[in-house]
Amino acid sequence: MRILLLNPPAEHTAREYVDPANPNDHGLLDTADFGLFPPLGLLYILAALRKSEPKHELFFLDCIAEKISHVELAKRVAEIEPDLVGITSFTIAMYDVCLAARTVRAIFPSAHICLGGHHPIAFPYEAAALPEFDSIVIGEGEEAFPALAEAVAKRADFTGIRGVYTAASIRSPRVGLLEDNRFLNRRMPPPAYIKDLDQILPPDRSFIRNINYRSIVGASDRLATMISSRGCPCSCTFCDVPYKVYRQRLVQSIANEIKSCLDMGYDEVHFYDDLFNITPERVIAFSDEIVRRGFRFTWDFRGRVNTVTLDSLKRAKAAGCRMISFGVETGSDEGLLLLKKNCTVAQIRQVFQWCRSVGILTIADFMIGLPFEKSAVDVRRNIDFMLEIDPDFAQVSILSLFPNTELFADAAKLGLIRPERWQEFARNPVPDFHLDHWEQWLNMSELLRLQKNSYQRFYLRPRYIWRSLLATCSRHEFAAKVQGAMKLFR
Ligand code: SF4
Image 1 (cartoon, rainbow, N blue to C red):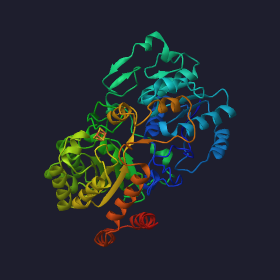
Image 2 (image 1 turned 90 degrees about the horizontal axis):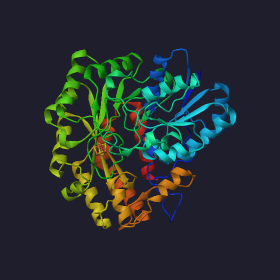
Image 3 (image 1 turned 45 degrees about the vertical axis):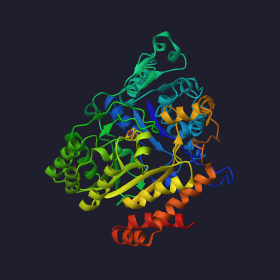
Image 4 (image 1 turned 30 degrees about the horizontal axis):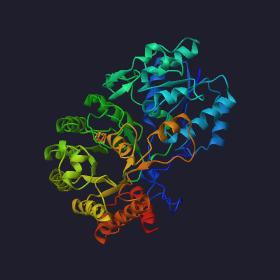
């Protein structure tokens, strides 16, 4: 069989921020401004397919990174002539995802089209009912998708494969018995999932050898992304991370994958885990393994402050850790409590100071437009804290309300949002969908103005500019900083 795994074009992705007073204003920095990262989930599935059935011919298109439009996609699909197409998805990208599926259907009506990714987890019934798809995979596809491929090749029934559904099978009495799913933390049809991450093959990066992925905060243009764990057991009230059970790989297996990346010419690794540093011991064990094996590369991860120790930072630095991104969100203990961040302002201060003392760069992710920020003064106070901890990079988002989160439910209860909008969009994706925000106290125009002001307050400080120029050590870094600065001056 000829199997195509597809990251569809993103020409109509729902806008995160839209200023009703100025509909062309979508905020200072777009998601794409922070970088372009490979769809690792598809590369994992390609590795699994290559092993399970080597005689399949495999194809991969990342329309976003390769700048493939819907028109161009039609030409590529016609050349590939796929029998089976797996399309990854996020809910906010569903209009493009359906367009891409229709393109495939128009050219090869007999091709089997399967929808995977985040959307079927968030909206399983609506996803299964979309006429563009012959099946959906709910959950992690490394075992489910190759099993589906085998069934499709043999024209066999595939509805018994865990996590694979059709519009009919998801409503059948067998599936109708919804599980209270500990894995996904909600009532769901049984999903596909991988218990032991060391049992699956690492992503097949040979498919992205010639694609230029990048991160605005990366030091190199040979950046690999990697996952050392999946899931997050924390309960931040704004977060829709789908997998709640934390599963981690052995440090030896992570180090083996790093070795293969270094052999391919990568010299920087960005860990894409939801939560890399679940304990300081894990960071120490990983760092010591890297030192023991003598690898020379830089790496960074996303973490929480409440599991950081000075010792774990020192060991990470010795192993090449260049940067850590912390979800700080807000600068008051009351706020942190309400967001269920399970940390304190004092801990945040301490960890940013430790990072500076050992020479690890920091990114602080802040949010504004939080339910307890009732005025511009409250927002500015939050940003004052950002200036106080003085990270090397800062990101200021406006809180977006996603289904399956506590804040989404709170907003719905208060009548601030109409939650059915999401189901309606999931049933019938349209191009002009936009996200909801907490606009009880400050409206979107005010929040966008405050967001711009926050970025300018942070990045346009003379001391910051000077420090950051001194610290720029590669052409790639310099170009990224100039690009960011141009936007700030806009
Ligand atoms: S924000 Fe981060 S730490 Fe909190 S639940 Fe989501 S992934 Fe976990």
